[in-house]
Length: 109
Image (cartoon, rainbow, N blue to C red):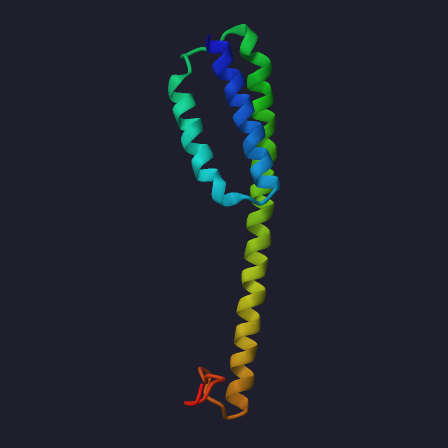
């Protein structure tokens, strides 16, 4: 029975890897709750027949961690680009004598 739980752990790791590589980050919280429940049900020590599943889960976790680091770096870069663009636009508006928060709509809409 407990070997099946470790197979489930490997299956969750495969699912997590697919979510991360597909950039479906919003689905990770639900997967983490399922993993927490599975982890709580695992025995204190793994039977020998669970070793392959544990190795696979660990391998996939390494890939997930690397993919998440890359996604975080990409997001940080995009935020820096957006911040620089916003600062540049504000500078142009100030130089043109326009208020920085001016709306493109007048009272007529």
